[in-house]
Image (cartoon, rainbow, N blue to C red; front, side, top):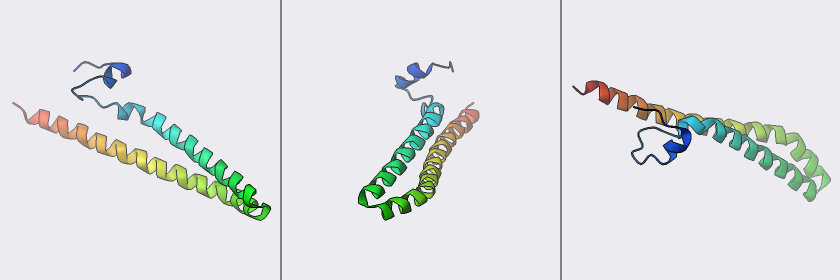
Length: 98
C-alpha cells in the first residue's frame, strides 16, 4: 500500500487510510483554544453581571478550563482508540487471507 500525502488522503474514495489519526493533534489544539475562549467568555460574563460574580468566575475559571481540556482529551483518545481498533481489525483480516 503506497503512502499518500495528507491532501491526497482527503480525496481517497476507498477510505483505505484514515486521516483522523494524522490530524488528531490539530483537533486537540483546536479543542484547547475553544476551552480557553469559553473560559474567557465565562469570566467576561461574570464581570458583566457584577463584581462579585466576576471574582467568583475568575476564581473558578481555572477549574472550568481544566475540565474542558480533560473532556476534549477523552474525546480525542476515544476517537483514536476507535480508529486503532479498525486498523488492527483490518490487519487481522489481512493475515487470515491465504
